[in-house]
Image 1 (cartoon, rainbow, N blue to C red):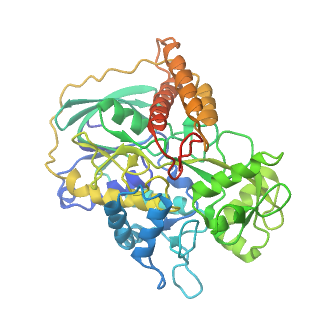
Image 2 (cartoon, helix red, strand yellow):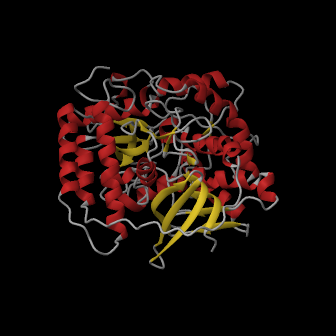
Length: 501
């Protein structure tokens, strides 16, 4: 394999793959003047994108318009959004859907042959494009299929970034670790795109996959890039209540189709908290559920989908139905679904401009790892896949600016020292002190406990990938707690009982 590239992309979710596909469409690439390498921790489809159920938001219906989608996004984000970015992304959305369809993505249509758009929480109109309840998988599969036969793109699966240094202006040196061969390698690049996804592994229960350890934020921070608002953590209101670390997500679209939230007495309760009921923004629904749990013995509430037509369930939610049968032995057509809010999405991250550029020249961040200003203090449902492909496209002019294949240079990026970090302890502290409801005292205590873990762990002599990842989890957790302590008011997903708002 080559050891020098114009652009290296880290991550194979919709952010990384769509960036790759937009680069492939450039004249530079077609003329053979642009070298690209994509590395990904696991298989190409081992991403959070693959598990995204609900869909992607874009204006299409005759009753809908850009102004409504913009207003919904700003309202959900507690007006902490960057209004310029919100308008830019939402007005680009219909053309981005055309790109996805051109790349082979398929979305559900109704009997009239028109796209069957759904409505989700926080949206005033039906504008969610979906493929049953496996939209992310449908998109992921299409994008992988689109690039898999391109011999001019270098792809390394089961490969993780373990160190990065800026060797000179427009030259990044990367140390990589291949988990299958248990071997290390060095490469360099002129532009580095972090599309590493979320940080769900900071918490005990999350809808994120095991790979979501906050790597991009960790490496960007080490390079000196600005990180912002990573304590704006969105909890999805309806994670399936079951054992195990990865919680199965019950899509918001089920509530959009008419499912109701009930307490342990089988009583609806959302009317007590918001006029939009089950379709209120996620932060409101999550806190409402937690308040109900405080008033009852059960550690969960119920989602009641029994009033939804069985044909609708089988047409639009077959995966959820099958998963509930497989995991808990219940049929959502007749049985109540036990649910609890679960860590879901990071609204903040690496601070970027409208082209996905971080504050470090040549370093880009696309997707959930980035803080673009689109989401503000709370992501509107189904705006995340939209954001990823939007900034992939926005980044292209700057990514291909002043590129030329760098000559191979001798690089020897030092390997990180592995530390025996107890990841479970980190997750316990974060879940207890930095969950849906926080307090000043709790955040300070979390910071103390994390610092103790950081100070009292011996160095390991041999590199161990699990411990390496666990150290990333610890360091990103410390950044999150610091950000949370500095917040002075409650906004969107951020709620501290000692603050106003």
